[in-house]
Image 1: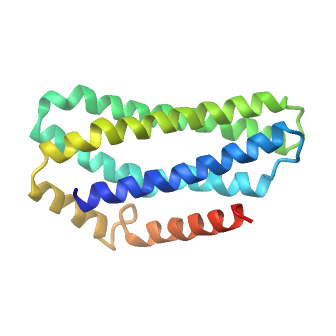
Image 2: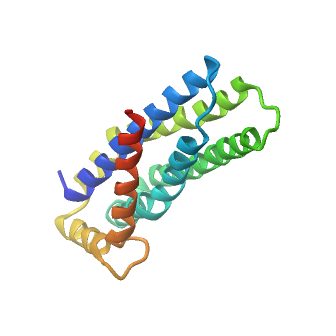
Image 3: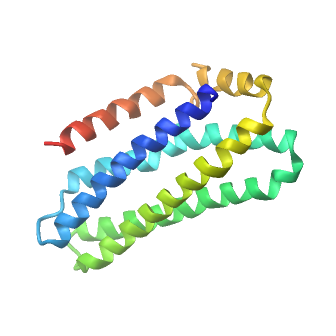
Amino acid sequence: MSQVIAKLLEDHRRMTVLLDMLEREISHYLAGFALNHFLIETILDYLTNFPRKCHHPVENLILRRMTIRSPAHAPYLREIIAEHERLKYLLDIFITTFEQEKSGQVIRPYRLAKDIRSYMEYLRWHMEREESLFFPAAEKILFQSDWDIIETRMNDKGDPIFGREADRQYRALHKVLVDWGEK
């Protein structure tokens, strides 16, 4: 397995941990407990910024290299990009409903739970699809020279999107979230 795919799988694992924390928080909320706004806001920051800054740009590089190597895969690759757009749309709905609840607007708990779970279910489905279809196809189609190019871009410290600093920041945030969520 390429180091790039291993990193993307690790990203998915970390996002799954956050989704599990969100599910636990929503279950408590539906049981009548107060919503932990700080926890939700911190998770939202991660789910909004980490994919945009660190994860999807790597996937997009892979998609571009795959399209060069196998133009027949282009329609499928466009589906992945469309799924990323759908994720952003569902996350925006989740954020809007959460912000309304946080500001004191009367929001039915089940509406907030529905909006959060719609996003979570779609993200889980999307990650499973990438892991079962996209990543194996990339490993089949791409040459070592393609992976070398992608890894070089990921490791380019001067690149604001692929620089390691952004990734380190979100790894640290993830650790804080997990440690705090387990207490």
